Length: 108
Ligand SMILES: NC(=O)c1ccc[n+]([C@@H]2O[C@H](COP(=O)([O-])OP(=O)(O)OC[C@H]3O[C@@H](n4cnc5c(N)ncnc54)[C@H](O)[C@@H]3O)[C@@H](O)[C@H]2O)c1
Picture 1: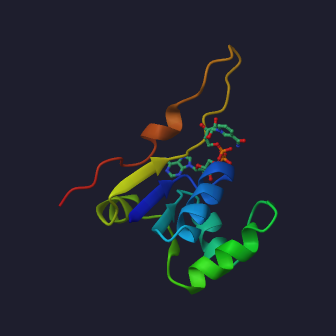
Picture 2 (picture 1 turned 135 degrees about the vertical axis):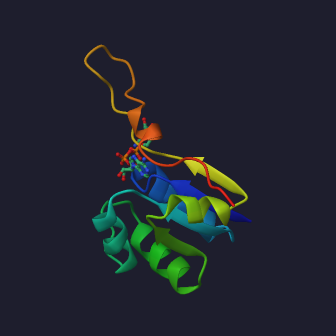
């Protein structure tokens, strides 16, 4: 199945990689251009046991890709998972502003 994961952090990168390892075609999207460029070059910004190897293998086998183009990723996907950050504010509430920081609809 074609999937995209929006937000390539601790949750999104691990989930997207595991979805790819399970045989899905996955695009991991982030709005941090430097992070996506690093991942494309094989530099993994977080440590999880075995993650780097899983990323390398799934990229090499064509099931895992990284992008900053949200609209393109959504258009190419049957299911999209949102895993952007929602840090706690001073009042303990979740800051949901990241969800509106990108274009969440794809046209065409
Ligand atoms: N990390 C955990 O252990 C954990 C556990 C349970 C729940 N969660 C929840 O999962 C969600 C993600 O957490 P995380 O730890 O992966 O956060 P994170 O900060 O590691 O990653 C979030 C990513 O989203 C990207 N992002 C932010 N706004 C974006 C946008 N508009 N478009 C594209 N990318 C965008 C950021 O650049 C970042 O790379 C949060 O809601 C968090 O509360 C996390």
